[in-house]
Image (cartoon, one colour):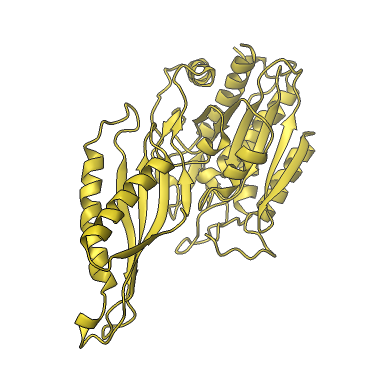
Length: 393
C-alpha cells in the first residue's frame, strides 16, 4: 500500500493544531462589500503562504480583485507524471449569531469553529499531505500544487481567475466536506437579477401610471410555469433535473405611489449539457413573449452575480478511478460516488476534478460548525494514495 510507504502516518495532533490556528484567523467573505485596504482573506492567505514556504515549496500568488490573493505552492516532481492540484478556499461565511466563532477548539474528537468544516479542514489536510510526501522516500513523478483560493462563498472570482491565469494542472481535488464520499459531478449555478420598469404616479390615479409590480407578477407566473417545465425535462443520471427558484423580490417606494420598478433575484441550477448561453436564451424568450403580449412591459436582465458551470468529470477518468482505489486501499471499503449538492470552485479550474473532503455538508454555515478529526486523518491518506496512483499510471 502506498500509505504504508510513508514514513509517518498523519499526525492527528498536528492536524488539530493546524486547524485550530486557521479557525482563529477571521476570513469572512464580505459578499461584494470588501474594504480594499483590508481584504477579507488576506490574513488567511498570509498564514497559508507562510506554511507553504516553511514546507519548502516554491510559492506564488496573484491578486484577483481589490487586493484579494490566490496563493499556491509547488512541490516539484521528476517531470514524467501529471500535475495534480489540491485546491481549497480561504474564505468563510458570516458569523452573525455565532458565539465565539473564531475560538477554535477540540472537543470529543472534533474541531469546532467557523470555517472548521467549510473548508479550512481541507487546507490543513493539504499541508499534512505535503509534510508526509516530503518525509517519504518515494519521489513524485509529477508536480503537486497546493492552492488557497479567495471568494468561493460569494461569486467564485478566485477560482475563475485561477483557472484562467494560474499554473497548468492536469487533475484537481477540492476538499469540500463530503463525508469522504467522492463527487465527480454537481449542478451548475446561474444567479442574476431581473427587473421590470414602470411609470410612477400618485396612487389615486393609477390609470396614468405603469405598475412595475403588476408586470413582475405576470413574469412570476411565467417563471413558475418555466420551473415546472424544467422539472419535467430528462434528468441527468447523477445530478437529476435542472431547477429554477426566485429568491428575493423588492419594488416600489411607498404605498401611495404606483411603483416604477420591481426586481427579483433568481437562481437557476444547470445540469451537464446545459450552458449559461442556453439558460439566458430561455429567460430572454420568456421575457420577450411577455413584452409582445403586455403593453408597456419593459424589463432588464443583469449580468450574473454567479455563473458556475456544472461539474462533469467522467466516471472513467483516471482521477475518479484512482480515488476509488485509494478509498478501498485506505478505508477498506467501496467508495461512494455521489453528486455534490452545492456548487463549488471545481468546474472553474478547467480540468477533471472531484470533490472529496472531511466533514458533513450539514455542518457548513451552521452556528456550531465542526469537523471530525478521524475523517481528516482518513482524507490525508486518501489524497496521498490518490496522488501516487495517478502518477504511477
